[in-house]
Length: 247
Image (cartoon, rainbow, N blue to C red):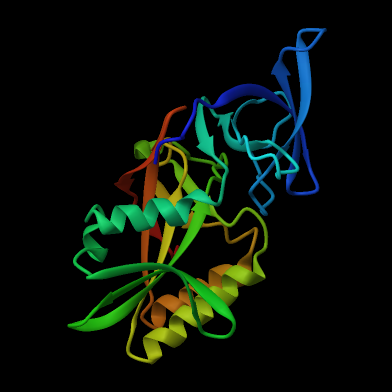
């Protein structure tokens, strides 16, 4: 996925009310212009909301938008981290359609945001006349925390979630229900950063989600994790990461 126009560099002042951020941009009579940007991320953004961090914004020319700027990336731990949770579904759907993800290749049709379960929508539905459909739920991952032993044997952990998510636990239950109906169900974690080598659930942040994922896996739900390659011009799937779901 390429951004339609160059991203604008700024400096984060604060993120607040979940969906808003004040950002300093170069310009204005004092050399700095303060703007408010939309933050398309409902999580806590732990580790990527530090005041003063360099950030990159897209800008819309749509006159009907209340906020012209959207927060796309934050510089954290020396690298770019994607925080726009609107991108992962499109990135995964495009990668599946091009055969980039071997485990999900070969389906005749790829559809997005299809209603299923109890008043839910599946992020990606894969269909083929010769096999059961595959329901693919996609979660954005940006969390990386320091832990004792980090870096030993080259292991750096990406983690999900960054705050309790009852909605995420509900999605796991509905994926398991689709397996019970004879369908395939896949939980795919997309890490929008380049500096992690493995994935695990942040059990201390949301033990209920951790328990729900273990139940889902026991019920037949598959798990995948991919990291991304990010530049100021584009975001693309990069490589699969190993998952650890149990100690």
